[in-house]
Image 1 (cartoon, rainbow, N blue to C red):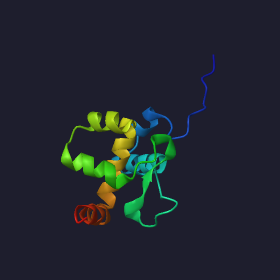
Image 2 (image 1 turned 135 degrees about the vertical axis):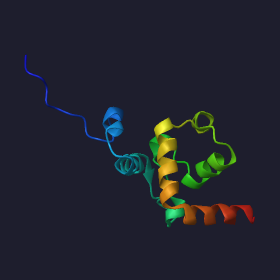
Image 3 (image 1 turned 90 degrees about the vertical axis):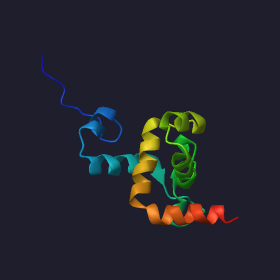
Length: 108
């Protein structure tokens, strides 16, 4: 019996994500879960896709910085663990802009 050669597109198959390098995995997770906010320009204003409730990345980062329990954050925001991982990856690449956004929040 011949084996199927069809494969799911990477980024949709969690097993495919696990086979990527850490940098490629971060790229795939960011592409899958994070998008620009249509009404707020700037990399610090990016958000999760609407399917993941559209929360601003900076809000989830603030929760991550206040407590490191990713499972609890995923439950509270009702998002997937991969979405939390995508937020971490996006933050690692845009730390300065997001930290500035968080500092602006604290100054209010």
